[in-house]
Length: 378
Image 1 (cartoon, rainbow, N blue to C red):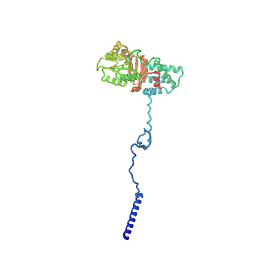
Image 2 (spheres, one colour):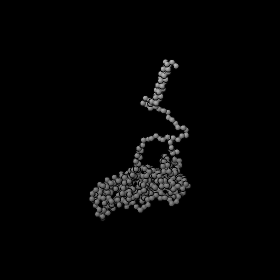
Image 3 (cartoon, rainbow, N blue to C red):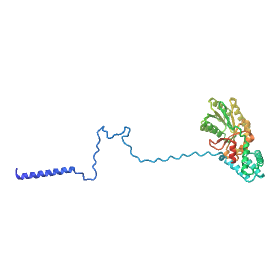
Image 4 (tube, one colour):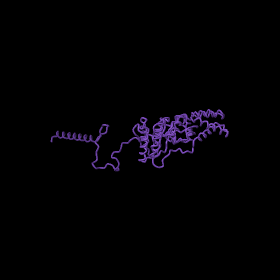
């Protein structure tokens, strides 16, 4: 081989070796770019277990959440305490209290007793009752040598309580067997229907079954009003067409209640003026119709306390027509003359069994003479 060609072959071989070395070194050198090279994620073959975990652990862990501070529960508002009888008789208490304060603000003398008597008359106790109470008060004060206004007030409370028969049973009569019947009577506007509604609710809350008889067939929408109370109380309602005979309604209602073995039947009657003789006679007829089939356990006369002494006249007439066995004295919270309670019981000898002291369903309370007088004079 010629010498010149040999030299060229050596140079060519050297060049190839250099190029090969550069290529080899370039493959091992890390990339000059600062950002890392992203490589595709390799997945394990199907069926390969990549980590051990309980079978009930979720495949994907839930995202981590920042702990949330639970809001404190809203404070439970306590029911407002029920007003006392003293508070409900506020108008009468203030009316009588102001006048007695003037009379008893000094050592008792003749003028004191005159002022006490006037205060009692203005509170609607009645002239005869006020005179009797004052005379007795004056005598006892002298015998016991009482001179303190506070002691005189205490003695007055004793005398007023004595006007009531504190031993008398003031509970509402319940028939020993079968359905109890309560007849509710009174003039317009005294609160008869509302009283029936409150009684019905109280009875059903005590677990008794109740029916209401809409025997007020003359007043427009009277049966609808009674129906509202029946729904509220969960009671049955018996009614006829407007203008129907009240006696027929009462008769059918009684049969209805007895057939279904209901505990109590309350009969609503039309409000009527005590001066209207035909209407009062009709009221007596309602009672007689029921008694032909069974009995009437209570005839409750509802009197509006704001009527004052006129309530006494009403009571006398209704007592004769319907055989009233008890008084429901309503609207005592709205009058300044609560002394009418004393006059009613002392004059008529008919027990006050319930008093209404508000519009709420729970504002019908049993009457207790001592509690009443204490609230009135406190």
